[in-house]
Length: 624
Image (cartoon, rainbow, N blue to C red; front, side, top):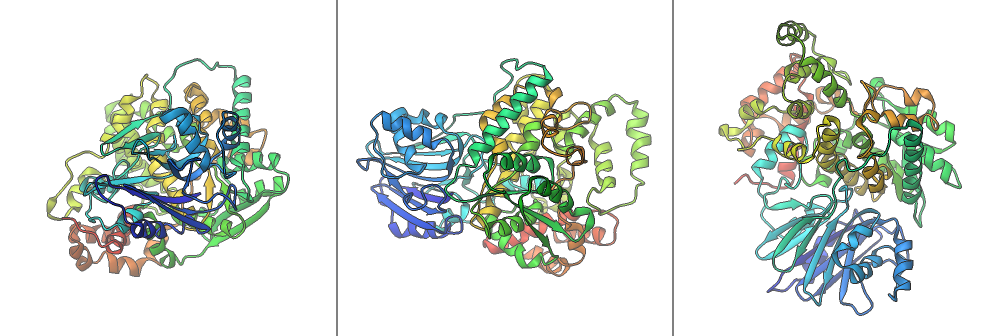
């Protein structure tokens, strides 16, 4: 695991000092080692967290004659088999790590070598004889890579801060802001910085003075019949899961696991325990607020498998870490579960350098409660209009406002407001924070972006063939929220603590096979993760398998009214909002007043505005 960065400037020179500064900005990602290589029009940098070939895997590194250079962030799980094959073909190695495999694979197979890689990765490869730079990001977008064309130079890095170090303009992208307000994160390929882009998952960027971005992998649409025999499907899924976990455990340092007490992380820990020679180290986070605390379930799994279990209780001192969290995301990111991820990564890093997590299971196996809402919405659309648009909304709108973990009144209101929309719009709207109408009132001077934030989701929905709504929804969520919300959260919060997190449930072979499984084995009726739970029954108690999905929530509503209230009063005061010039101070004040007096639950909206305000000041942004 590393932080990587670089500049390519055809027709000009690259200053070593600039690459050094970019690399230094990423040292939290790689505190063990760092290296820089400058050659002609290109400079490469890497800050290294040593996992494979701890002593000998220094980056950047090259082939035998120094003509091909590479830096990598991530892990190639099948590097040993690839290395053995390349040795048989006559290639010579100077290290025993995974990054050197890249340069020799490229020599042997050209750009298509990326198809042979298993794992999570983002890398840069410089072909000096052809004066050609190749950037790549893994199939599911587990590891990040951002880039910018500026003043004839291509700048790139694992995080936006590396590019900013090179002295580029800092302007807000209004379209990215519009999307952030909808989703609490910025969907790629945009970033909140005008001109800086995310390389999409499963894509290559080729730069030789001209730039080409092309896709090399995608979640396959339905191509073949994997069968309908429940026993055979269960057995095959179990084998794929075991293979994925076994491969993700490859390391020259100790490996642990996040254990939330939910189904996905519990299955990962169960499989790890069956494969490991010693007790697995597990790490969990909890809260004093009982409705948010999942620790009892995590303990059940830890006790069953005899893990070396560690817990942390998050005390309500959020203001002490919120500024650090804002700094590590580089752009506004308001998924509040990042707070819990930060703390669990912090405690894990005290014991291990690598941890496995259960992220990705909801998108691959069908685990989000919004898939239940999608099913109910299909039925709701067939209700008589008098019920669906009159009587039921009237009853729901009389429900008292609550601030608990589930906030059933808010969910019920959203459901009846949006269930009769077209399927994709309804599916996306379950997650929307600020509606288009709210955003029109929020912007200062009435300014608004000229697009609908659902356009990107609709493009993916339309691109996935077939009439199976669930599989199309899974595809949309895998391409957007999985990459730019869930995986971004895990990467930034783990790397903030110098911890590598691996996600075996996103093994691309497992993802490809599950895409061919009939949707009835993912969500059956209102039962989520149907086939996955079938496998889990052999590994976990029914209390874990059958418990209602809880999600990884943190007690933001209470924090907003108590611990964070002084910070909110400062950052979202009319004067502070007016100074930044992005939002209408009167509308922001109205949101705060409605929330504080209990008329509405705007906790997620306020959290998003607070994060944006802190980010705007921290990064000295401009809207011009």
